[in-house]
Amino acid sequence: MKKIIYKTLIYLLLVIVSITMLVPFLWMFLTAFKTVAETMQVDPFVIIPSVWQTQNFGNVVKAMDFAKLYFNTLSMVGLRILFAILTATLSGYAFARLEFAGKKLMFSLVLLQMMIPVQIFIIPQYVMVSKLHLTNTILGLVFPGIVTAFGTFLLRQAYMQLPRDLEEAARLDGCNIPQTFFYIMAPLTKSAMVALGIFTAVFAYKDLMWPMIVCPDNRATTLASALAKMNGQYQQKYPELMMAALISCVPMIILYIFFQKQFIEGIATSGGKL
Amino acid sequence: MKKKTTSRQKSEFLWGWLFILPTMLGLIILNIYPMIDTIKQSFYKTGDFGKGNVFVGLKNYEKVLGDAEVWQSLWNTVKYAIVEVPVSIVLALLLAVLLNKKMKGRDVFRTIFFLPMVVAPAAIAMVWKWLYNSNFGLINNAFNIKVNWISDPKIAIYSIAVIGIWSVLGYNMVLFLAGLQEVPRDYYEAASLDGANGWHQLINITIPLISPTIFFVLVTRIIAAMQVFDLIYMMIDLNNPAWKKTESLVFLFYKYSFEQSKKGYGATVVVVLLLLILILTVIQIIGQKKWVHYE
Image 1: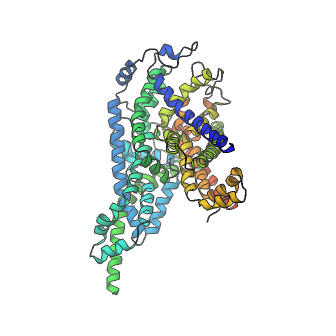
Image 2: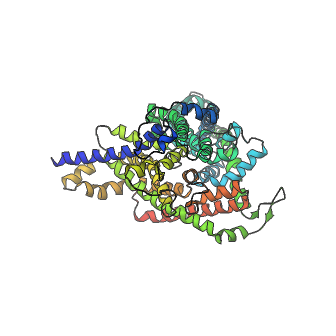
Image 3: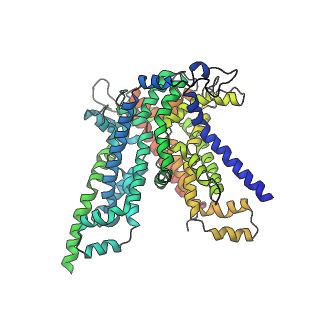
């Protein structure tokens, strides 16, 4: 009997927390289909819209070019993933498995970058982007993510966990270093690459300050930074604001639901950087 | 034999540098040089209208230390961190312990708790701003109260800290769950044979055994909380009466550097933030000896 009460209490607590996590999303969804008048009515308080205002979608898409914003965001995310995996796979392998003079010093630079708050890089990075005339471009958005200290660290860990015999065998079979890396070792770190890819994607998609600084133009910027703009302009038009928020987060949520294991592991293995 | 090793060494040297070259070039251009440049800029006054920057020595630092707005924003940041970090860690640890069993719906709960982690803070802040709305918001109407969650200067920063907790809870929990996987089951069996109840097990077994994870989460959460920006930037507009009482250090950095083009002064604020984070981290690394148990 005591055990049943205990178990019920645990479930009750977990359900209460779940509701707390879900209600904001539900409220965003419901508000997105209301009229402004409905959102400003308290007696009675409107929970479900009386008529689902699907034209809110059209209004928001007309005001902000969401197709373009999605294109920008996806391009930035895609390029950052590509660069991150490419550079970190190479450097992670070298730091884990090759011996060369200067390695320790170089690796300490990698660790240094990981420990320093990103804001300290932003002013000079912005100056570089504007000198290169890359403001309001996709490349400008990608710029600080071309290489990744954190990814290097993550891939290095992955290579260090692989058994040494693999390389020895490959070497005896006459593979040189790039062959061993490319054919034997790199394919074995796929799960670390996936983790890095997901981490990079989520981090880039959520980032607000960099796109606001380098891409102030409405049509050149990312979803997050466009939301910040609308937030300032729309003030009390909550249905449209919620519709915009909904449009910008639904695809990510759907991806998350399908690949939740990879998402959770990808973000959790990457530890504290978010 | 000897010749063979040297040719191997040569080849490792060559390929090693070749492999790290893209990363190192990028890091030096994108991070190391900018870091040095930001520190350098903190000793300069940004020139007006294309005039060169003027070296001012420690003037920016003197000004920062005498600037009431900087001190207020530091205090706001600390208030945010003092609420967000401990509450999110304690709650997450509790949830992780509850979910660290074979039970129905475990994965569903985990998925739900982690959900805010994949949504942009910009969107999260918009939703919460609407939930917190004084007149028409869900929270005030559901509980029939009248609280100015984000426009009352006394509580606004704590309301924002609640969003921070809500956002990061699932993430901390997942890290703790990973730590709990490492704790051997038989420890608990032995303890329950000795008659230890759940609470005693938590205090005497679970927490000491996952103290390295707790330490890691604590250090990284404090670093992240000290850099809070997105939520505050989205929640508080300039005509909000709570504005002065919610600005964080990074918010101030953004405002000085990019809205007012006072890059030298902005750089100084961010260098001060770096030093603060460094000091906090060192204190924790020294303090960990007292409570963190490594196997």
